[in-house]
Length: 295
Image (cartoon, rainbow, N blue to C red; front, side, top):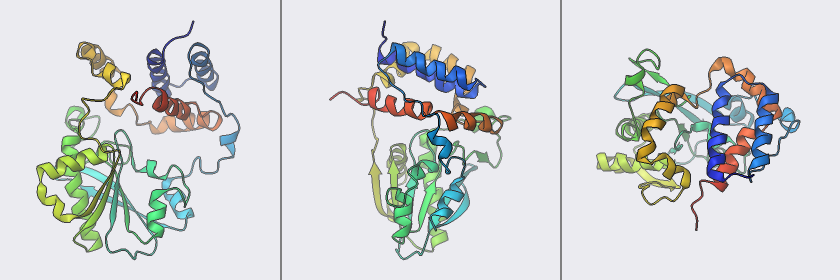
C-alpha cells in the first residue's frame, strides 16, 4: 500500500519535529526508510560524504573570513525594544550605496551563504563588486532573539506577540536608519526575499516616506497576497475547521521556538547530520513535490 504526498508531508513533519527529541541515528534512518517504502518520496542517505565537509561546523564568521572578506556583527534596537542582529560583509567598498539583503519566512541571514562559493553566493558577489552588504535578521530568529525588556521564557506572550506587521512598522525603518547612519549616506538598495518583500511593501504602505531612503527595491519571490495560492499543504493548514486542533498541537510543541535548536542539542544533531542529509533532502523534496502549485 502506498500513501499520498499530503499524508507523507504530515509524516515528515513529525520526523522534523523529532529533531528536538534525542533519537538515535539508527531510529531516524529507519523512519526515513519507512517513508521511502510506503511513499513516492526518495531520500538518498549520504553516510560518509558530509564527514569530509570541512565547512560543516564552521561559523558564518569563519566562512566569510575564509573568502577574504570582512564581517562585522551589529546590534540594532527597534523602537519597540527588539534587538536585531545584522551582519555587515565588505571588501573594498567602492559603490556609493549600501545594500540590505533581507531573508524570508522562518529564515535567517545564514541562508544567503549556503552555497559558500564566490561565484554563486550573492553576498560574496556583491561584496567583491564593491558593495557594502548588510544581511539583516528579523525579530525572533536565532540571531535576533533579544529584547531590551522581555525574555523568551519569562515574558513568553509579550515577546512572541508579533507578526510581519511589526517587522514592517519597526524592523524595516530601524535597519534602514542604522545602516544609513553607519555608511554616512542618504539612500540604500534593498533586496528582499519572500517575506522580506512583504514587510517592505507593508512598511512603505505604513510610512511612504521610507521610499525617500531607497535607491532601489528589488524583490525575489515577492509576496503581497496569498488567497490565490494552490498549495495543498497551505490550504490544509488554513482550514478553519482544523484551527482549534492545530492550535492545541502547536501550543504543546512551543511553535514559536520550533525551529530554534537548543544549544545543548546542537552536538547531538550535528553528529547525526554528519552521517545523514535526510532533513535537507526532506525539505528539498517537499519544496518540489508539495509546495509547487499545479500549472
